Image (cartoon, rainbow, N blue to C red; front, side, top):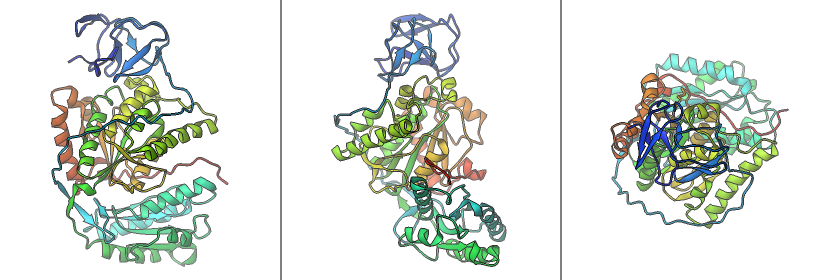
Length: 494
């Protein structure tokens, strides 16, 4: 196979491998001679397209021609311009969604917490209320790892960040919400919260913010109030470790699983292989009674009406409209162009406009109804497909997905990235060359979908793999210790 025409209405096709100027490509009844070298993942014109004419991919317009495009031309960011512009009004046009996916009554081996929540990891986390104690928490984590040798505990991790003081308004609350969500996340068997004592994010107020919690598993240290913070900290950590190390895995219905959907370093294959794979998995998990969460709001622009018309009711539609326009107003408030996307890496990979990126990006959530919309820092309340307010930035969005309660983040990529957030961050390659080149980054290859394997076959392998990960099999970011958090910041720093 040399190319893919994704939808019968498309007037462009996507190359599977590098093609050369002069190559003769047969598409349907047409013989097309390529007028330029076309890199893999990029588009070529199936017909002549007049200046101003729409470029159609996935069955939708992805922009218009800046100049006349001839059949066989390379179609890229130099020849396409976005059709998107400004804050819009939307009309609810609900569609009927009927997905015939049987309940297979699958299980995984997880940890049932005392409050009924479920974790897929049993880790000890050290979380600072303020960046001033980052050095302290890193050393405490090193000391506990050396002392315990990680017996019966999946990992001991410190999560430094730069915030917790000198912040105002939403920034201060965003920091508190994300740290609260971490402290309560069921992937942690125990947490030590470490503060300085004079920060805005006071330990006593943060403790109240947690509500009811297991005091044998979540403990607090204010370093200004003790003589030797390492002696005090290690004593608290030993108490936590004694509790956490007794936890054991048990059979958990897959309906308890919560999975985040994310992409980064996307390319022309993202909307053909990896993102559709996540889409069919998302539909499968939702049909089993589980939950998935889609974020990256700026990468919904141009495809937002597809999501809006799948909202389960008018109330969720209105929340989705607010989600979209609120983020557009964030760009406007900061005097930045709303559609300054895709990135240079996206363009090099074959993505030319934000519509094209969004139409590929939103495929990660399949075809299920949208059941709820979450603002930044909110936790999942409704099973099924959720939308979450967060930017496209990989670290910020992945942290937000974990903080919404996701046990695992599925991350599709065409160019590769090593990072991980504080839950397993499973990388899915859009193409086989990346999978072969970066085995230390990529956990699963979706590139075989355009080679010799059906989407259904890949989906079944993917389901089995995710259940293995949920049962304790580490992914690459965990093996290498690549774990970090990033908190959304919009305002001033004192």
